[in-house]
Picture 1 (tube, rainbow, N blue to C red):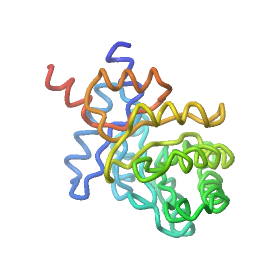
Picture 2 (cartoon, one colour; picture 1 turned 90 degrees about the vertical axis):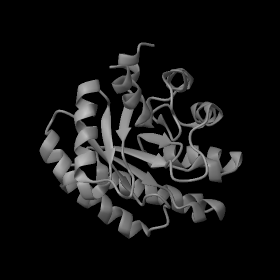
Picture 3 (cartoon, rainbow, N blue to C red; picture 1 turned 60 degrees about the vertical axis):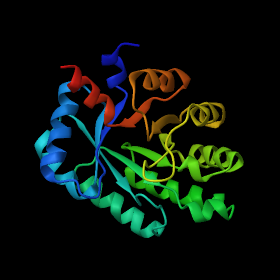
Length: 217
């Protein structure tokens, strides 16, 4: 796959705790210049980024990030505010304590609550694969599917590891036909990006591919 085609799958991401508006503005400009799918940025910058970008680029933000243990009510409020301020896509983190306790009905209900708020806007569900067993990952594929979310996403990029080829293959085998896959965390080359897409990932959360293209001139 050509690099320009791969870029159409990229959520160009900057979620650093110390990110400034000037840094966010740069990734917005780069996303437009290199034709990414979206920019993924902290909630506090959504309104300003949307005003800056208009319809030139989709704005994605994160909810319950990065730990996922906010209450459902807080996540719903965060989502409502992000959408009011112009977010086009929402990436939420599941409650991993509920996952560890096997409370998958509760996890499903929370995802559904956020999807109800999102309506036709895209909802991606981050499950933090590096902290889970294979059985938990499979159960979350079912939860994400039953809740009606648009994507299942591997990782926040803030835990012990990021996306793996094996996890994307596992997702592809167990999510419903309407659920797409986002690989995120540690994607550092076009070779890896191409393989993730070939295995079934529709989105890639990364900032490194744009950096590679900029370095190439």
